[in-house]
Length: 276
Image (cartoon, rainbow, N blue to C red; front, side, top):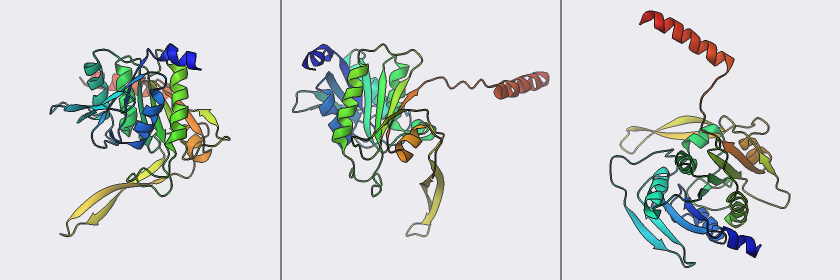
């Protein structure tokens, strides 16, 4: 094992997240990844959850260096998670061998969550720059509400994350693979299984809650209830129903080409062409 560590030590990993530079999940996985590669962390100064693939066009991005006790370095930035990948490429003056994003506080299973997540957005941005990427996320405990990072043993998840990264660092990345989306259940035991899955459509029924502030003016707050069941072999099914680890390959091809879609497009093309 030590020989293998020496072999991958020449690899460079850009580590980021959307929970912020002080996140327990980020720092726990960083402590594991430095065992197998050079790790440089670029993460938002403040939590940036659910910002999707936002990029900062309208103001400058500030960044400052952090020196960790283990000798690795990091940078706290004012950018969004996707920004941090681009900031990292600029500061490092080269592309890393892999971008690792997470470990996120809250699972990012289902298409709805993947497209909303800043954690997954960083992995998406890496793929646009031809960099292999893996996003790691952990399911919330029942008593957590995205306020305190409690009820999750990030240590075991970080160990498994390191194993996954270690195994994939020297594998040629498939051309059509954007990133691997890994989601952990709240608790991992010796009986915990790993499923290779596809994304569920969505896991929450979202709605707006309307209240009034002290001045009696109305405001809205987004909320949602988790669905009770999910299709078998999907990521949310694996994490929520089976209490297992889900690994989902995510591609960039959003092109829908079913027969039904082809017929719809043909109808639009023919009818609109006659009207132009």
